[in-house]
Length: 259
Image 1 (cartoon, rainbow, N blue to C red):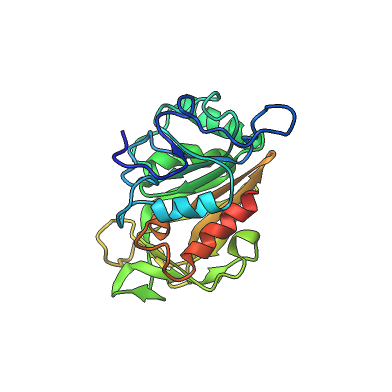
Image 2: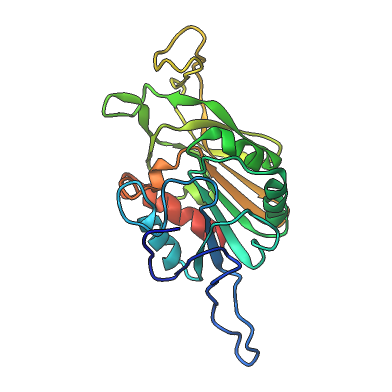
């Protein structure tokens, strides 16, 4: 269970304790089409309901400012738990998703839902993003351009493809990004410089087997009637980093595109 809550977050599962939206005048029917749900059922360390540098309470406030209800999901993902949800956010998942959960998420997007993935560990997310033509690598990216604090895993991204998600961005900061490969209709809208390299052998040192090239950092896809955004690092949206560079503007752009 969560140790602390913020106003507007319903505790428990989506099915239990769900907040209700304003009623349609004269009908008594709740408007839930703007409901946003954060998944907390896959070992996420950070929470939108807690403060502290490694949580997402500032990002939560950004989501809430866009209107609608915000809830958390603590149970396995099912078609029923996604009913009435407009945007489903998976931030920093550490545990794998079952085949049934992947199927429910895929159908949710195809039927008009928005999926927002912030990757902390690549393994759990592969099955979730693959149906949308977005592959997450099993290696971290290192940069030679825009390095932050002398650590090549930490760097600014300043190469953007024109898209609503990247509108007005000059640079964003990442702190341990995986590479994303966009294919089959998806698009990489933020990429590294051509001097970036893949740490294939995980020794944090560039060797002959580590390819040097442009790598995707953010990928988007319109699939069916829904939309998908995959950011290959959850760090830009943590409390300690959201106000760095244009990280908050990136979050706002994504939420605006989802409307």
